[in-house]
Image (cartoon, rainbow, N blue to C red):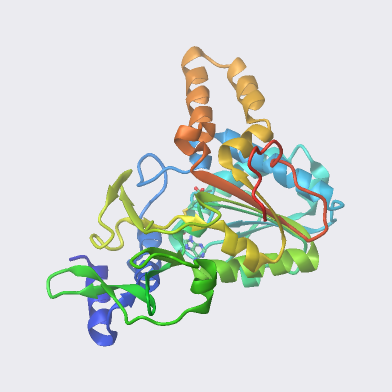
Length: 359
Ligand code: SAH
């Protein structure tokens, strides 16, 4: 048993089975043994690879989007450029590299990273040297200024509760200890107005998920954008809404058991964007990652980038481009949601969607 498994077992023995949210919070964020505190999760040598790590093209498209969103909102003379859960700092490094083309934009910004893990902060600091960067733990510490914010694969790492539908209410799924190992158990059925409104007429036995911490963060960001102006771009795997168990564990780029090797594997759930949109109370646009990147001009940028390269490097650019946009790879599974103040002009990148989301 890992050190963290012993701590989780002790907590279960003291207070009873844990919600999946509490279990995730301990596995990922425990101050001594949590996954994001100890390991090097991201990249080829880590457990999973994210879009900014696949190609600079991703960060370049996000940089263009942020500069345009800032221009669409009247080019505020001071603003916060924020990223949630910046991983190895690669996305922000690409954004800052591109932003030098617009001196007015780069002179107006104050860069702020929302990151709880000291290990990840150290990696981000190194990647972003010599830029001046502020670190904060939570979004409610963001400076009171117009906010232009990006979050890639952030919400999927936040704790989620699971519930099973029954005739007499919702049974929360929990993590119990059976004397030798961990197993899932069910709490007594309880009424839950939010779940019943969100998932009406669900068949008995079906599992649903809710991340209240994600909704709180979305509400906070939305409130800041409404009050001071700005825009946010959230990219993650998932959908507007959905049912079913999406709780998963990944180690060395392969799927593993969620109830084993605590603190040594990445635990995530698919993101449901609709509750986040509602919590933000902002105007919202939504599409797939593939469509968003195509709309932002990734293909012509990839062609230009490739044109000056050797044959092998050209192939690498083309493979990375495909991985990001191909619907069979990341293009469809990953979604993009943009937030802006109610009544402000639409943001770029969401054109030509054959099935626009009605939100
Ligand atoms: N955005 C990065 C990495 C995503 S991994 C990329 O695209 O490569 C998730 C990141 O969120 C890590 O940096 C992790 O330390 C951070 N994180 C996880 N939970 C957090 C929380 N509650 N608050 C702030 N950061 C968190």
